[in-house]
Length: 127
Image: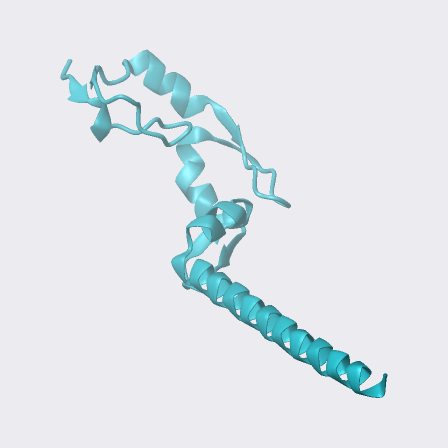
């Protein structure tokens, strides 16, 4: 059997790379067959289809997904929160929106302070 570095391999179930990278043997035929016939349940809201692991890619093509209005990338609806945490155009828009809100708040406070100063001056004149 040929050994490979784990950084070149991806777990067929969780789609993660092993950490830390190390030499790993590829799965035996028994393990590969067990994985191929194992059944998966789709976690996308509204889908919940049950399908064999070997049909995973076909299911992904049929499964509901969304297109990001900020970056045009397509992602599974179940990964929306994760996508938005990593979507730079979305994060930049949010940063701009929050900066504008802060600027408006500062301007409002400045206007209030000027108003308070004027009313204080008027009350001094009245007395």
